Length: 176
Image (cartoon, rainbow, N blue to C red; front, side):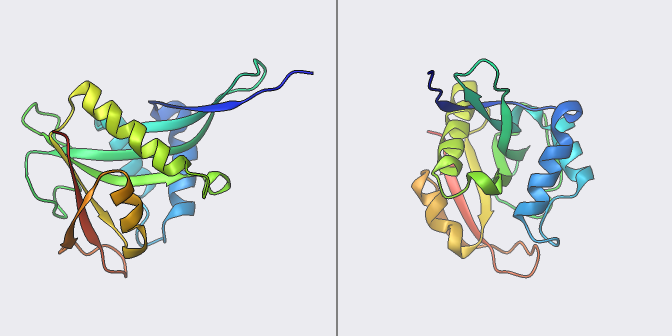
């Protein structure tokens, strides 16, 4: 009798293999007026792939395939503040040192198990290891502020960005 254990890996994702499932998870995780469209997710995968990572299961059983269970994506900007515009376009230049995170998503079946926080911490470590940005900005609903603070983000306050029906709060993570 063999036992298997599951571990999790943060890895690159691509349009061909992963866009459909990423779009499904995004749609299941955010209200319709907040979820990124298929086109926006495709744009981010194609243009901001270095800061778009998937979270995969990795079983010790050889017959088990890796399964995408979540993802984190963002775009980079040269601006130091988060605005609707900085969230809309990816700046690939070396001077774009601020990362705006758009989505932190774990598939419904894997939630409430600490995997979202583990994924986010792995993502932050990846960004540090690759020296991809100096700071990270994101928008959060009030009930998720503690989640992001647990990963090391600091609350900047209410955001001026309007997206959907609810009030958003801006959080920041400094890489140094």
